[in-house]
Image 1 (tube, rainbow, N blue to C red):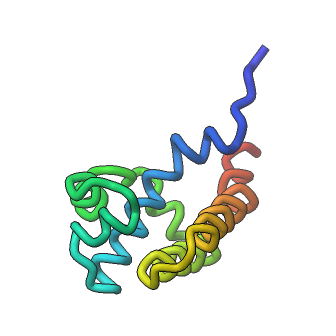
Image 2 (cartoon, rainbow, N blue to C red):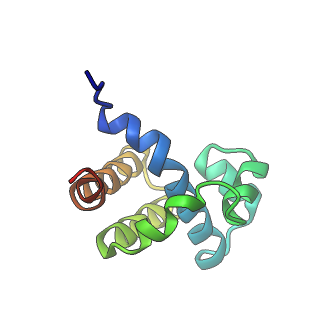
Length: 112
């Protein structure tokens, strides 16, 4: 018997580091935020942000995520919401949208 892993667990292990890396890079490169500012906005440490910006974390799935325009757009919207200091509920909804798109478009390809 094979134990099925819930998609949220797959998301946390496989995709979340790449999403954090892409969001940190958008905030750093497109919104001109410092690593310290990004760390505060994302609830991370500055060294973690540095790892994400320099692709030392999350790099395995980045190309796959960026290959899907809907995911790329959803990541931009998440970074924009974080940059603008939107309410936590809005930011969480943006994360959920990314998850839905990945599940629908990318993860489905892997499991078929």
